[in-house]
Image 1 (tube, one colour):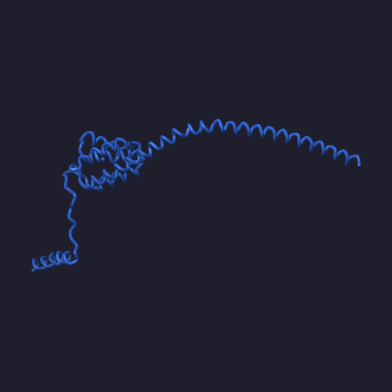
Image 2: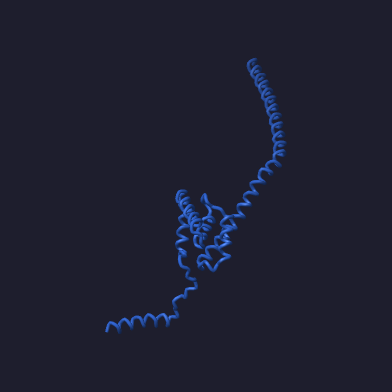
Amino acid sequence: MATLLVTTVSGCAQTKSWWSGLKEPASTDQIILGAPAADVYLNELYRLSTGDPATQAEIYADAKSASTLTPGPSANLRFALVLATPSHAGTDPQLAQRLLRQLLAQTELLTQVEISLATVYLRTADELIILGSESRRLRASSPRAVQIEDPATSKRLVTVEAENRRLRRDLKEAQEKLDAITSIERSIRDQE
């Protein structure tokens, strides 16, 4: 009786998915022994992005030592992802870009999730490199712009200072005349 019940229930579950057109998704991800799941990478990247400097330094050191001591696609990917993540002391987009390109040249050693992460972070590293070079260019051009504007600014400043001196002199003369007129008016009032 129990066997009949189990068979009926399992048959209903199979028939239900068949009737509704639902199928178990076929895994297109190749299985590579020892490859971490996506959430392992994502959790570490989250901790790296939101952690304090000590946590960030610990994650960086751990990823670097794992990549050095046991170099493999997963360890190298982990280190490259850490390098490509901005906002921590170990960020190095150039090295991350190089490592990610090397990894993507050997996709047969990576799972589909790892390939996706490597591709996304390669674009991030590319953008960080572009932004960094643009930032350096703007900083370098800024002193030149100041140097170019400096003579013009100095000339305007000299002109404004000369105008201020002239206005002070005119104001002083006007004040003296006003004082003289006030003095004359007092003496006229005193005489009346």
